Every structure is written in C-alpha cells, then in structure tokens.
Length: 395
Ligand SMILES: [Fe+2]
Ligand SMILES: [Fe+2]
Image (cartoon, rainbow, N blue to C red; front, side, top):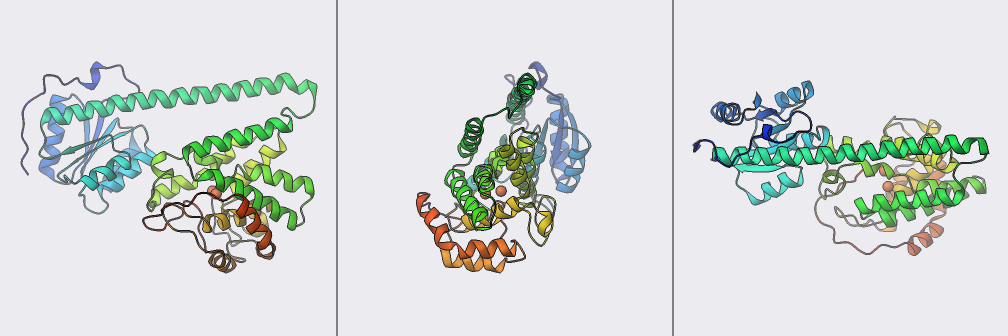
C-alpha cells in the first residue's frame, strides 16, 4: 500500500484552533493493516496534535468506544470479521457524538453513497495526502461541534417545555379539574402526529387508519363507548417515539442491522417517556399504547416481553390494527399484501402474536375494517429492495 506524504497542508486548521464542544482531541483509528495503522497514528499525533487510540478490528473498536468518548473515529472498510460499514452504523446509532470518517482503498460510488447514508461525515480514499486527511478530519470535527450544539439547544428547549408545563400545572392545580381541556388534548395529538409525519412521510395515513381500526376493534370487543373514543385518540400516538429515531434508521429503505433494529425498537420506550405523567387520561393511555403495541400474546414481543393479559388490552388492540395496516399497504421495502394474504398471515399469528379473542373479533369485522381502509387510502408507492419491517414482526 503506497501513501504519498506531502507534509502538513499550510491551510490546515487544527481542531484546537476552533472553539470546541466536548473533547475534540481523542481519535480512534480502526485499521487492520499494521503499516497503514502506524502511518495514520503518526500523521494524527505529529501533524494534527490528536491523541490517538488504534484498533485492528470492529470488536476491538467497540471495546474502546465503550471505555471512553472519542471525538472522531477513522474507519477502514475491509476489516476482519464485521465490516467497517457495520461499525459505522453502530457508531451512528450508539455514539452520536463521535464523528465517523471512512479511510479506505475502496473508491466505489455505491460504497461512498452507502457510507454517507449510514452516517459518515467524510470519506478519504487511499492513497491520500496528509493535508487531505487532516482537512477531512477537521471538517468532520467542525460539523460534530455544530451538531452537538444543535442537540444541546434542542435539549434545553425540551427541558424548558417540561419546566413550564410543570409550572402551569402548579398554577392551575388549585382551580381543580383537568389541566388540559379535551380540545387541547386533540390538538396535542394532532401536532405530535404531524411532527412524526414530517420525519416519516408514510406515517400520516398509517396513523389515521390504525386509530380508526383500533376504535372499531375496541367497540366490537365490548369496551365502553368513552373508552373506545379514548383508544381512537390515544392510538394515534402509538409510534410517536419514532420522533426520537435517527433519520438514517427511520428512513432507511433496506433491511435494518441488529444494532439499528435495537434503536428502532426503542421507539416504544421513547413514546412512553414522551407521554407519561400527563394529567390527561388520553395522553396517559397514549403512553401505555406506545409502550405495549409491540408486545406479543406469546411473550416474544418487546420491550418487556409481557405475556397474554399482562399486556394492557389497549396495547393488544393496537397490535392487531397496526400489523393489519402494515401488511395491507405498500412500503418502500415491499408491496402490500392482498387482504386475503394479510388475513391468512394474521390468522397464523392467533394466540402467538395476537390476543386470540381480539383477532377473531377483528377478522369477523373485516367488512367494517375495509370500509375504514377505503376512506383512508394513501397514494401508491413504487416499492423496491428487500422486504423488511420497521418494527412489525409478523409470525
Ligand atoms: Fe411501532
Ligand atoms: Fe405503526
């Protein structure tokens, strides 16, 4: 492997010249070739003034990443065992404050696109110039700093909203009665749903249909009228936690890696966190549904692996509605099932994925279900790629 060394670039600005957020000096190198690793270490330590840790494999790199925070990680793509792209996806999902740059001999357009889609901040092709490498690293650290500022600003705003809401509750508590009138609750639900739809376009019609299917099933299953109305409103928030899932995962058209799936599955916990502790019965029910709509009757669901009636009935209702809707609509990764195929697939999940009584009731009500579907159709998509479900495992 031949590297050209042109000495320090005169226009290079070291990371230490700029105001920093967090530690900008620790860099992890992941390179299996000992010569290439040594060269990177020397360049970064002597020309860039960075503190460098080196790893020869993905396993070793993950161990280092768990031990301390790194400002950046330089990743070779061809590594023994897991690939550099898998490490990149892990860093993007689990170490959001670490900037990842690919340093590789692979000068391939598709690979470059894949790396940027998976969260890379830079891509340097070997043989590289020293200046080129240092500028890429400096740019990545600058972007990291901006993104960290941005995230901390959003966190501050969120904390302010929580504080002000708490203060408002305190002020209104002596007046008695619910803090939020029903109309305000509906508006909160609409706005949260709209926020998710901005992030994830396919959620809009899905939310409306799941909400209507859930109300219908709650009604047919014998819940009291005020309860199925609450289910209709609260089930619109079942996926609201996806607001907290990174774009690279939420909008990924292809299969999710195990790490990405684990991040996606946290939408249940995030949705619950967002809605819990409300004075509104509807938002509190929304928290329960967000948390439990991926639990399964046989205990193989997530996040808690609850079994049968330990799963709140509203979570079991939404599980049926959610999977039916996921199956009967096109997604970017697969075409819609026909109604017959969807019904057969769901019947296969009776007493495994789904509460058997609720599933029977839903399938017996299929004409009413299809009427709801007709009213809330979405435009056809052009699916491509391999089938994968975001978080809707079907038995
Ligand atoms: Fe979900
Ligand atoms: Fe959903």
